[in-house]
Image 1 (cartoon, helix red, strand yellow):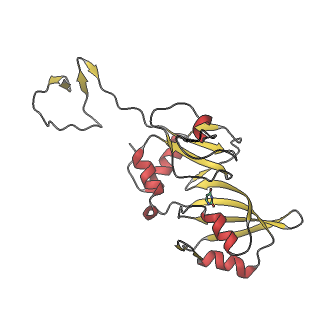
Image 2 (cartoon, rainbow, N blue to C red; image 1 turned 120 degrees about the vertical axis):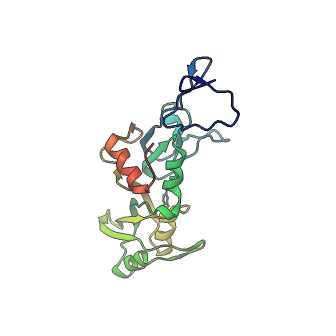
Image 3 (cartoon, rainbow, N blue to C red; image 1 turned 60 degrees about the horizontal axis):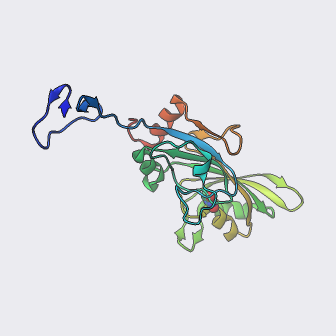
Length: 214
Ligand code: URA
């Protein structure tokens, strides 16, 4: 084994993985390139790397990139922006509540939430796993004869949180889409389609988490 072209015989030699070149039998060891993509998740797909029941998983919609895994979860019937990466530090930073990365959801709900209901959602509600943090909530308008469209921005990632919040105030969710994660927006990416993040998007995402971009 060589380190920067010099043979290493000392056990426990430390290296700087960002700068040092390690080679075995003359072949440099390269770390897999970091890759982060966004997928417009369609309804009907589950967010898991593998499913023992062999149902549709989001992994069937994306290329086979070593180590790529979803960052957090969207419910089977939720559509919208799902990030996948092979950077474990990014996954940790985006899913750990201390980093407070905002996620924006648009929900179509039954009924028309009134001002008092919107205020309860904004202040925080008591769910069966504890109170929710204050949220930004905006009524977009009516949909159809008996429904409404509501936009929520939350930074927690509790299981089925948006559905449970809206059910708790008497407005069950009919459809749910995630429009944004931190600085990233879904834009006009068609359902079922994925793309790499642009360098600017990657930079903004690492900035939002406060961790150093590799
Ligand atoms: N909140 C939900 O209820 N479902 C999701 O998929 C994401 C957030």
